[in-house]
Length: 141
Image 1 (cartoon, rainbow, N blue to C red):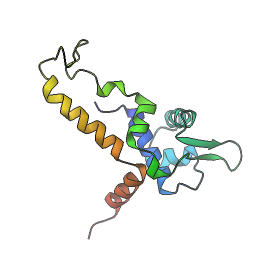
Image 2: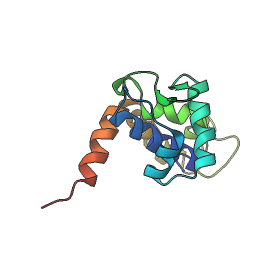
Image 3: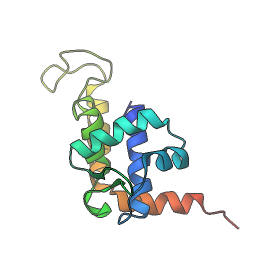
Protein backbone atom coordinates (compact mmCIF):
# COMPACT_ATOMS: atom_id res chain seq x y z
CA UNK A 1 0.00 0.00 0.00
CA UNK A 2 1.32 3.44 -0.89
CA UNK A 3 -0.38 5.20 2.02
CA UNK A 4 -2.83 4.61 4.85
CA UNK A 5 -6.47 5.67 5.16
CA UNK A 6 -5.31 8.47 7.46
CA UNK A 7 -2.94 9.70 4.74
CA UNK A 8 -5.69 9.52 2.12
CA UNK A 9 -7.94 11.61 4.38
CA UNK A 10 -5.10 14.07 5.00
CA UNK A 11 -4.53 14.50 1.26
CA UNK A 12 -8.25 15.00 0.66
CA UNK A 13 -8.53 17.53 3.50
CA UNK A 14 -5.41 19.43 2.42
CA UNK A 15 -6.65 19.48 -1.19
CA UNK A 16 -9.94 20.91 0.09
CA UNK A 17 -8.01 23.65 1.89
CA UNK A 18 -5.90 24.34 -1.20
CA UNK A 19 -8.99 25.40 -3.13
CA UNK A 20 -9.35 28.46 -0.85
CA UNK A 21 -5.96 28.71 0.88
CA UNK A 22 -6.49 32.16 2.40
CA UNK A 23 -9.67 31.18 4.25
CA UNK A 24 -10.10 29.44 7.59
CA UNK A 25 -11.99 26.15 7.37
CA UNK A 26 -13.75 24.30 10.17
CA UNK A 27 -12.87 20.65 10.69
CA UNK A 28 -16.59 19.79 10.65
CA UNK A 29 -17.03 21.54 7.27
CA UNK A 30 -14.08 19.66 5.76
CA UNK A 31 -15.31 16.34 7.19
CA UNK A 32 -18.79 16.89 5.77
CA UNK A 33 -17.64 18.09 2.34
CA UNK A 34 -15.08 15.29 1.96
CA UNK A 35 -17.14 12.56 3.72
CA UNK A 36 -14.41 11.88 6.27
CA UNK A 37 -15.25 10.81 9.85
CA UNK A 38 -15.09 14.01 11.90
CA UNK A 39 -13.18 12.74 14.96
CA UNK A 40 -10.64 10.91 12.83
CA UNK A 41 -10.16 14.01 10.68
CA UNK A 42 -9.74 16.20 13.77
CA UNK A 43 -6.77 14.09 14.90
CA UNK A 44 -5.28 14.17 11.40
CA UNK A 45 -5.61 17.97 11.20
CA UNK A 46 -3.94 18.32 14.61
CA UNK A 47 -1.02 16.19 13.39
CA UNK A 48 -0.69 18.28 10.23
CA UNK A 49 -0.75 21.49 12.29
CA UNK A 50 1.76 20.16 14.81
CA UNK A 51 4.13 19.34 11.93
CA UNK A 52 3.82 22.76 10.30
CA UNK A 53 1.72 21.93 7.24
CA UNK A 54 -1.39 23.63 8.63
CA UNK A 55 -1.96 26.57 10.90
CA UNK A 56 -4.87 26.50 13.30
CA UNK A 57 -6.76 29.30 14.99
CA UNK A 58 -8.80 28.44 18.06
CA UNK A 59 -12.05 29.97 19.19
CA UNK A 60 -14.89 31.76 17.47
CA UNK A 61 -14.00 32.45 13.86
CA UNK A 62 -11.16 29.94 14.05
CA UNK A 63 -10.32 26.98 11.90
CA UNK A 64 -7.55 25.51 9.79
CA UNK A 65 -5.67 26.81 6.78
CA UNK A 66 -2.54 25.86 4.90
CA UNK A 67 0.68 27.02 6.58
CA UNK A 68 2.32 27.51 3.16
CA UNK A 69 1.16 28.18 -0.37
CA UNK A 70 -0.40 25.09 -1.99
CA UNK A 71 2.41 25.11 -4.57
CA UNK A 72 4.93 24.62 -1.75
CA UNK A 73 3.29 21.55 -0.17
CA UNK A 74 3.75 18.20 -1.89
CA UNK A 75 1.89 14.94 -1.45
CA UNK A 76 5.19 13.56 -0.16
CA UNK A 77 5.20 16.17 2.64
CA UNK A 78 1.75 14.98 3.72
CA UNK A 79 2.66 11.30 3.42
CA UNK A 80 5.78 11.70 5.55
CA UNK A 81 3.84 13.70 8.15
CA UNK A 82 1.07 11.11 8.50
CA UNK A 83 2.68 7.76 7.60
CA UNK A 84 6.40 8.38 7.70
CA UNK A 85 8.73 7.71 4.78
CA UNK A 86 9.86 4.22 5.65
CA UNK A 87 7.06 2.21 4.06
CA UNK A 88 8.24 3.27 0.61
CA UNK A 89 11.48 1.49 1.44
CA UNK A 90 9.95 -1.70 2.83
CA UNK A 91 10.32 -5.02 1.08
CA UNK A 92 7.54 -5.80 -1.41
CA UNK A 93 7.12 -9.28 0.07
CA UNK A 94 7.68 -8.26 3.69
CA UNK A 95 11.17 -9.63 4.28
CA UNK A 96 13.02 -7.84 7.07
CA UNK A 97 16.47 -8.08 5.46
CA UNK A 98 15.70 -7.10 1.88
CA UNK A 99 18.18 -4.58 0.44
CA UNK A 100 20.31 -3.93 -2.62
CA UNK A 101 22.95 -6.23 -1.07
CA UNK A 102 20.42 -8.89 0.02
CA UNK A 103 17.53 -8.57 -2.46
CA UNK A 104 14.30 -10.53 -2.26
CA UNK A 105 12.99 -12.13 -5.48
CA UNK A 106 10.92 -9.00 -6.30
CA UNK A 107 13.44 -6.37 -5.20
CA UNK A 108 14.76 -5.47 -8.65
CA UNK A 109 11.22 -5.19 -10.03
CA UNK A 110 9.79 -3.07 -7.21
CA UNK A 111 12.72 -0.76 -6.57
CA UNK A 112 12.18 1.38 -9.71
CA UNK A 113 8.42 1.45 -9.02
CA UNK A 114 9.01 2.72 -5.47
CA UNK A 115 11.37 5.36 -6.84
CA UNK A 116 8.76 6.49 -9.38
CA UNK A 117 6.07 6.66 -6.69
CA UNK A 118 8.37 8.68 -4.42
CA UNK A 119 9.20 11.07 -7.28
CA UNK A 120 5.51 11.48 -8.17
CA UNK A 121 4.60 12.27 -4.56
CA UNK A 122 7.43 14.82 -4.32
CA UNK A 123 6.56 16.48 -7.64
CA UNK A 124 2.79 16.70 -7.10
CA UNK A 125 1.73 19.80 -5.19
CA UNK A 126 -1.56 20.56 -3.47
CA UNK A 127 -2.14 23.26 -6.08
CA UNK A 128 -1.93 20.60 -8.78
CA UNK A 129 -4.25 18.30 -6.81
CA UNK A 130 -6.85 21.03 -6.31
CA UNK A 131 -6.96 21.74 -10.06
CA UNK A 132 -7.11 18.02 -10.91
CA UNK A 133 -9.92 17.35 -8.41
CA UNK A 134 -12.00 20.25 -9.73
CA UNK A 135 -11.47 19.08 -13.31
CA UNK A 136 -12.69 15.58 -12.40
CA UNK A 137 -15.77 16.93 -10.60
CA UNK A 138 -16.91 19.11 -13.52
CA UNK A 139 -19.58 17.45 -15.61
CA UNK A 140 -18.47 16.53 -19.09
CA UNK A 141 -20.63 17.55 -22.02
